Image 1: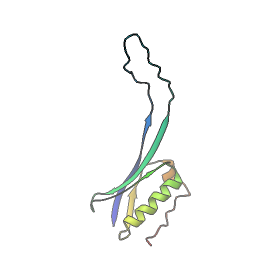
Image 2: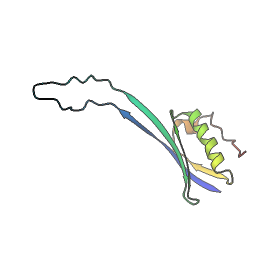
Image 3: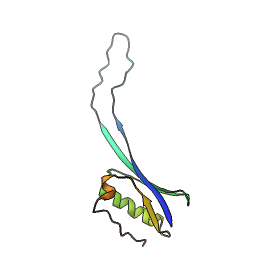
Image 4: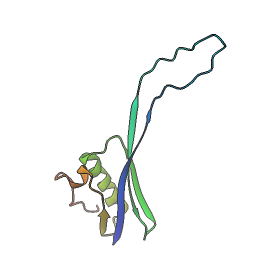
Length: 103
């Protein structure tokens, strides 16, 4: 049996206007455009076994959670897995595949 703690995190970049060097008397032109680019890291850790599974995905939703669960199933195929999750909507969705089996 493996007890896993699971969570996901959002990582990304947001462009910001920064000071720039220019010769005296010259004002540099710095067009601004706010760009938001994010990636989501899904991870599950089993402290007792010293194992971890993680995926970097472009979205955090039910489909991404199902992909992650398939990866956990492959990585922990020798164990009965109990996974602790928080209350994110995609953790409780009816479309979550809870009947995964190792293949």
